[in-house]
Amino acid sequence: MSAPRLETVLRSASQEVVIGHDRRFCLIGERINPTGRKVFQEQLRAGDLSAIARDVQAQVEGGADVLDVNMGVPLTDEADLLAKAITMIQELTDKPICIDSSVVEALEAGLSVYQGRALVNSVTAEDDRLAQILPLVKKHDAAIIALPNDEDEIPMEVEKRVELTRKIIEVATKEYGIAAADIVIDPLAMPIGADQTVVVTVLETMSRIRDEFGVNMTCGASNVSFGMPSRHALGATFLPMAMLAGLTSAIMDTRTPQIVEAVKAADLLLGHDEWGGAWIAAHRARQAASA
Image 1 (cartoon, rainbow, N blue to C red):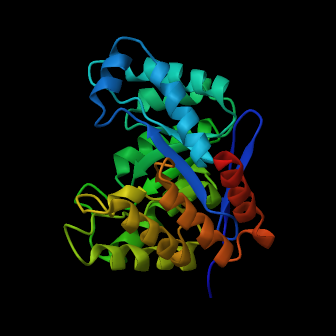
Image 2: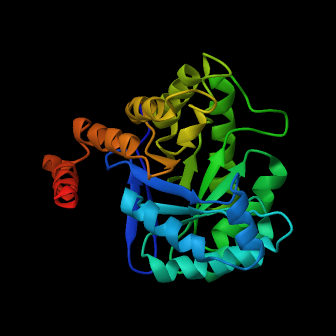
C-alpha cells in the first residue's frame, strides 16, 4: 500500500505556497546565485546588490513560486551577504524563499532575518551534516531539502538512494521532531551525457520515494541536460516525465518559457490545474503582452 502523500507548506510574510503531489508543480527560481557568474560575483564583493533586483524580477515574471537564494561568493562574509540579500528580496517580492548554503553560519543568519517559513537547501545523509543542520531547521520551523548521499559517494543504485532517504526521514522525525511533510527529497538527477542510465534511475527513485514515504521531491532541473546540446528541449521533456514519477517541484531558471510551458501543460494533463485555469490565464497573459 502506498504511503499517504504529504504537503509541504512554505510562507513569506504575506503569501503561502504548498508543495504537494495533487497540486500544481512548484517552480523554484534558481537565478539568484553567483555560481559561474563572474560579473555578479565581483558586484557582490563590492557590496553592489543591484543585480539581485533584476534576477528577482526575471524569475517572478517567468513564473517562479519560490526563490532560491545563494550568496556563496569566495572572499566574502557569506553569512552577512546572505542576510542582506534575503532582507532586500523580501522588500521586492512576497514569494517564499529557499535559503541555499552549505555554511551553517550563513543558514543561521539567513533564517534569522527571514519573515515566514523558509525552505533550506540542503542537507545530506551524512551524520555530521544532519547533526549540524537539522537542529537549525527545527529551531526556525523551516522545511528542508535532503539529498540521499553520504560520506562514501553519490549512490548510483535506486535501492541505496531509497535506503538513505529512509535514514534521513527517520533521523529527522525521530531524533529532531521534524515532520515528514517538511522533508523534501532531492533524488539526485544527474547528467544524461555522462551516463545513459541516470534518468531511468532517478525516475525509478522518484516513484519509490513517492510510494514508500509520500514526501515531496525536488531536483536541479538543469542537471540532466548538462553538457548536451538543445538543453531546453531536454528539460522540457524530462520534467513532465519526472512529474508523472512523483517530482513535485524543481529548482530551475524560470526565464526559459519552453520548460515552464511544458510544466504547465503537464499540470493540466495530470489534473493538477482545475478547469485549466492557470493554463488559460497564462495564454491570455501572453496574448496581452504581444498585443
